[in-house]
Length: 198
Image 1 (cartoon, rainbow, N blue to C red):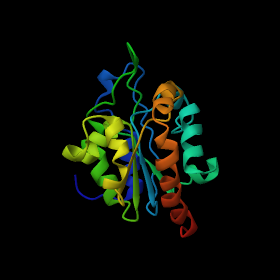
Image 2: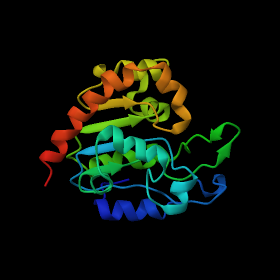
Image 3: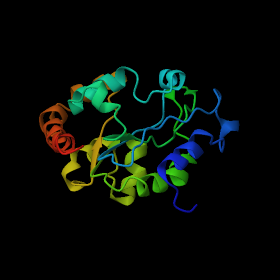
Image 4: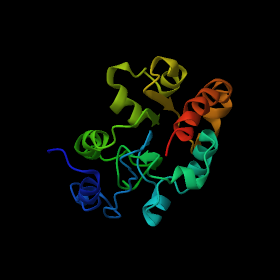
């Protein structure tokens, strides 16, 4: 795939049907991107509520994520500042213990061209194990907890985070260092991206 301008690329993504046969609720790619974005959020895949609305992180997990980032909804959904590019763009459906994994076709197909079209990205938040394994490759630790605990090793480009889902209450209870150590650094890294953005 040659280099595409971002509007054309987003049009191609919106009409993508590569894994339609494997999507029980049909394709509805959910992505937010702007050529001047400085913050890139890479998560897992849309949940059912996000699939229904077409708005990324439009659920309780998104509420917690915005709290972590200390961003208003207006700032969070400003594509000129924040890009939201999940590992899988469409809702994969339900499995036995939550949503199915993101489809494997999306990231290899679309992430590199999107990053090429967003040259101003300075910080990439890797939310959850799928995003961390895709971007960090062999540098990811053996568990999500270990990867997040080693967050300083991946700065300044990447910052690995757990998923902010309410289902992860036990993880947050068992890992109080996350709020004490990681969130202050996260907010410290986010703030200048918004002060200097046009």
